[in-house]
Length: 305
View 1 (cartoon, rainbow, N blue to C red):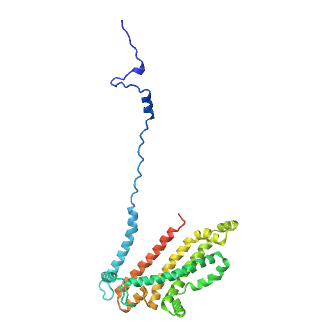
View 2 (view 1 turned 180 degrees about the vertical axis):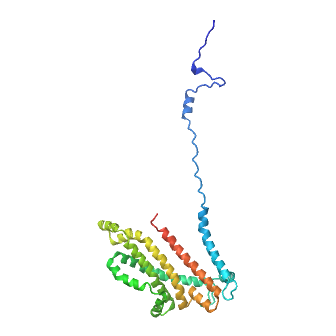
View 3 (view 1 turned 90 degrees about the vertical axis):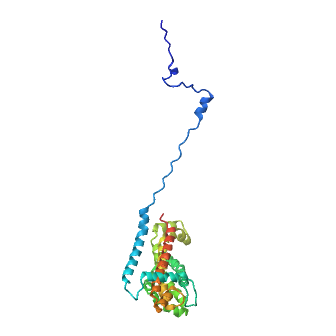
C-alpha cells in the first residue's frame, strides 16, 4: 500500500535553499520599522576653467605691447638721438629706485610730481562734479532752463583748455589755483551734458505716475530720476576724469611748480628724452587706472542686473 504525503506550498523549500524561519511578533515589527539607508547627495562637478577666455583677455594686450616695443626697437636701432627700449628701461629702473626724493622745490622725484598732479585733478574734478551733476539734473528736468543754458554750453564746450588758463591766472594771480580752475571748467561739460541727457530720456510714464501719487520733487529725483540717470551720469564722470588728467599735463607745462606736466617740460629743457618717454607711459598708466576704477564703479552701481 502506498501512502502519499501532501505538503503545503507554504512549507515547500526550494531545492538547495536553506530554510528560513518566518519573523514573528516584535522581531517582525522591528524589521518593518528599521530606517532605510539613503544614498549620499551627488556632488556637483566643479566648473571647468575657461582657458580660452583667459588667454583671449591676456594674450592680445601682451602681443600689442610687444609689437609696439619691437617696432620701437627696430626704428631706433641705429639712432643716436632717440633712446632704445633697453636704454629707456634702464633709465626707468634708476628713476623709480627713489621716486620720492626731494632736493628742493624744483628737483623732486617723479612720485611727488604724480601726487601733486593727482591732487590738482582731484580738486578741480571734485568741484566740477559738485556743480555739473546738479546742473545737469536741472537742465534735464526743466525745459525753460534747458533752452536758456544749452546755447551757452554749446558755445563754451569746444574751447581749448589752454584758452582758459590765462583767465585763471588773471583772476587768481597764482599758478596752482589757475591750473585747478582750468581742470574745473574743462571737465564740467561731460558731466552736465550726460546727466541732462539721462534725465531727458527718463520715460514720461514714470513721471506721470509720480504726478498721480503727488510725490515731492525730492522723491522724484531720488526714487525715479537717479536710478535711471545713474548710468549716464557715471559715463559723464568717466569722460570728465579723462579730460581732467589730460588738461593737467598741459596746464602744468605752462604754470610750472611740482607736477608731472612741469616735470616733462623740465626734462625737455635738460634734453633728457628717456625721462620724457617714461613720463608718457606713466601718464598713460595713471589715466588708464583712473578710467578703469570709474568703470568698475559704474558697473557696481548699474541697475541692469
